[in-house]
Length: 428
Image (cartoon, rainbow, N blue to C red; front, side):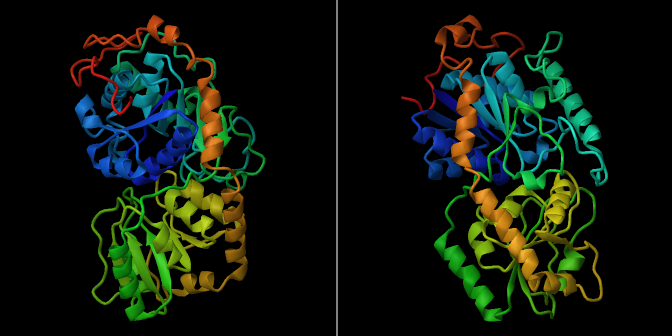
């Protein structure tokens, strides 16, 4: 089976797809990766054939920053690349409307790798769940509206979607949605939609650069203070955490390694015990720390739990309040206010000394590690492929292998971009 990975190219989305791709390749499938040109080094380290989305008309189409506005470009890029790779199945990221629509046009299955918690409506249950600023119903409706708008831009409106038979879940789940979390992170009594599967963390990241890691270690040893790892998510207009961080790590008992991530405008104070970094890996940095502070995005949360580190959470927007709330319910995290206070290091010190907090984090981490991860994900993906990945004739009947520029198979218009009559990239 030829499988095209087409996740968002930011590490928190790209790395889990690579983890699944490794296992699928080990099972004998041909796996290739489509992403922004900046993802090429990751693909090379992972040993996966790579195609740059820019070569298929997909500029910005796989950026988490631009996910809501580049769906049509993503659609065109995935259709072209999938045809060139003769893909039997797509593996994409949550919120990748273009990839979902490409699978619809090509009439092939698509598996979606989600976050560590479910974002949208439950199948049933969930009554009484705190909504943290917005309801699941609101989030689901907004995402479905955006999908419908992208579908119209791609020229696919006016005919039924193949997922119309599942109105509760809609097209957002693809043929299978793979959550990277654990049942303990969902609201008690809630039931996930049928096509949602909890597979575990899908942990993978590029190897740490030894010289860079040695430099970080040397810096931390000069201070000698206990280390807190801080991973900043996007601020979503909700204010900056820097006043709090500067207050907590200036003249106090701790020092911090702060991963800037996708956040902008870092503001560490001159006298603060803060080492600001931007690395494509975080595992070795978490290993150096005794506590992890995060806004509540999946990558640092899962890395912390897998390493038995308790968390302090300061959620802002997107999925952050949802995951932060789940961690607080599970007793694996404490809430750390975003605003500076006179004793800003107090909550950090209390969390550091909380043995029960740490034990609960370790227990949840053990559950996540035992979930199966890539092996379970590959099982789900293979099951999703069975109905339509075995028949070459079926692909021909839907115009799948047609290589005329501007032809899109069953619907829509794919114009310009990379020629579709080229040999499949990276496949032999």
